[in-house]
Image 1: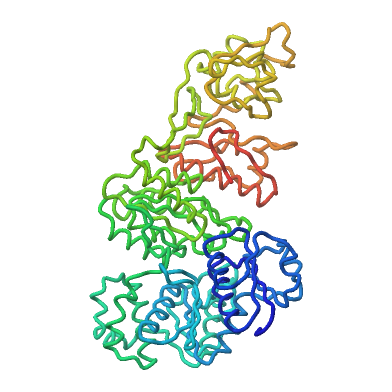
Image 2: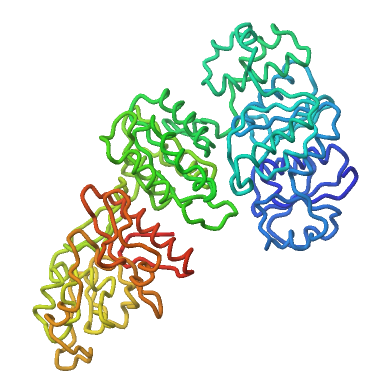
Length: 634
């Protein structure tokens, strides 16, 4: 591609940015675009590379070649406009490596970013003029650099393009099945590495016979975790094979390995670390490093990366958390994938609950929570922190976006700086309360609206007999516009008093199982019985006889009926009855009722609700919305 006009879509990504610098150094006219400007796009501009912001087909109008990654969606305007000129990043980098007489490509399931970084830095310290392109930054060591000597690259296998590399030296850190979105079987994954090995002039893929070198380097005195000791030894062996003296390598190595690439067990605030690990093996290493650094309780906040990986490696995840005291799971980061049954964070939670739930929490048996969001997971960790505790933000998704909030919160003078939210509750069960330590004050309401709904039915048997037997308080009924048999409580309301203000029914925003009411519902006025036109055709006892008797520990109907259908029918159609997560299970008598059984936690309920909603969506194409307040299933 020398001399061509080349445009890179998503140029701000670590892999694309490094490739852009290499292409420019080889004489290409390079430009790129990204959705948002960032420190990395500004760095690229300082290297003389034009970067456009946003998506626009005009960006690629005069490009002779357009480089994309699998993360660029098919509906991207630039991608569509570049039909016939598109090239994948992995193929382009493989072509560059193959055309370079002195190339070192570092591949592997784990550790390739660290190993490639340490090789490049070590060779630079030993006096070589190195070019590099690596998928990570290390302090002031950027993703790419240009020299006149060897080229060191991180070779990614995720899209299969590793098989196209013809490297002078191929370094293989390890090989363990991953990327099931591309490699449908373990054999296909291994075959990709085997092809790269066959293509390479030389291969370094084992530490056999290198222990004497480790001893000569004094490697065990550097305080490295076992996986990083392996990475450092491979970097040293590359330097030795290039003719550098062991004494010189030993002198340079301590400063090289003192800095890990960003997001490799990186401290971001006092008592808080972040790590990119998202494969169970990597995660176990990161959690064990955190355990060694932690003097108190170790909390791991983990966001699964992609539905396909979560599903394929589900059985391997729980053991990765064994060294933690608490694990808070966050919603799956999809990347470019659509939801996949069996790959949701709720599936991971259920697997962890099955692995750890029957034992007493303690060392080796963490307590597991399910958070509705990454922000809620951090709020729990922040509010629960005590002296000596350590929080590890784990994963390759948008959990990274927590870091600025973490830093702001840790810099706050006191916990008083954290705002608290009020949620009004009555004696009923229609509000889901997270078991996380969130900044929420649940306040029990008093007065008429706080009374059990049954008392309203008893007092007005001809006005709303169809509400007989429905759990909850009057205020809860009003806020969610509860109802049954085709009716809703808003039909019999004249006005509602909220936070001291009387609102007519027309100003309450009532809809199907919802309202616009916020704050404490303190009182209400009913329409006159004589003028009620609710169409009731029986007594409370008649309706009660027609209704299934809810068991203890339920929220009543959990999901709203979608237009023209019944949530219970849909859930029964997907086999929901009897499904269980921890102590929460679906009632055998009605598929739209979740029962809080013995030992059930709020996280159990959230996980089960997510699994139910996902089944209906993925199998039947219908979105279910919770009727229960405070819960989110997407």
